[in-house]
Length: 537
Image (tube, rainbow, N blue to C red; front, side):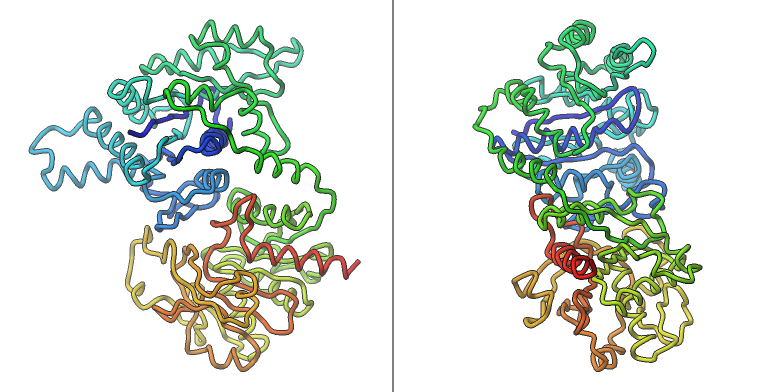
């Protein structure tokens, strides 16, 4: 039977529950256990797919097509395991399921209530994560902060799980803040104490307390937290602020966090294979050379909107021995810029990531044209591929009215158009091409050179596609269609001849990049960007 770890947070949001959960999962995997991760989000949206990035950052897509919280990106990047639809459960998803059952008559005329019907549904989602993954240990993060009205049903369900399975099969990790008060110049444990009191009031006694602070806790403070919160002193774990986030698992490892968990579960404490992560931390901390990459988007004020892209750039930087500095370029402002060479004067490469809607489109097209004409390495993702095709059609092929029906339903030259099966659909949620799809690479292409294989699978999140009616004219003018989904005859990758690096893909390679294993397209992009800037200097 699987064991279950539940990670809650108190005092304030933003303490790093997701990183704590990911770090613990990494340590347990390093001990030889199969680990799976899950996030409970208390909002009523069914999933974050229809949310503005300003509300919730990027939407992370799993291999089976689930649109999920960005924390799942942290999970996958840390533990290098593919998650699925059971990994992100929202209040909206739970209530939707319960109401559908009520409408079908599944409850046999019973009055449907929070307890037991909603809590039973939540528990079923926890158990489903274990059964679908076959994991030894499932780690579930509960979004929000203890005391929030929104998350109370989740906490009650977890209390019931502890009651059903016992302490040998469940473990509660509570992340809290230990603030440093200037003036008195000391760390204060009272917020942690009150947070645990709040959690106990909901029927849960934490087994392990993770204390976020600006400096290490003294033994005296750990003893104090231990006394007032009823946990052993060794179960009070420091989570000190770090510049390099990859240090977090190693800090927990030094404090024996994974051993504490395995001891409570009465599981064998196998030898830890953590050296690969220590090597990564050493590599990141020792980077000396730096290059700038321009990321052109319309949500650049909120960096979380592109967090998987920015992390993937960093991963490729590690592999190429360079630190990546991102030049965040607002595409709307770029539309008004008369001399865009000033914007990109220090940039070694230009990337246009995914997005939706018409706002800022012409600014992105200007950036793509600048990269193409000045032989600056370019990587386009999803919308970044569609706009690369539109820019090429307009400025190389002479199709001056080339556009997308996403921006103008009546455009005369729809280089990008809706998939046939999408036309007439009104609801937005879950109606895109989502998750893994096959792609076959042309053998003499740049893409094939980077992937080193002919058949690949990549994750998608889009509704519009390249219009094959224009393929012949673009090919005659030098565009290479190097990746195709043969089943539906859809273009997946384009590239340009006689350019140091101009590749764009319809899928989202950022979802498959890992710190110790960068995605091939990001790796080649940074490699060629490094070459470009060295030549320029």
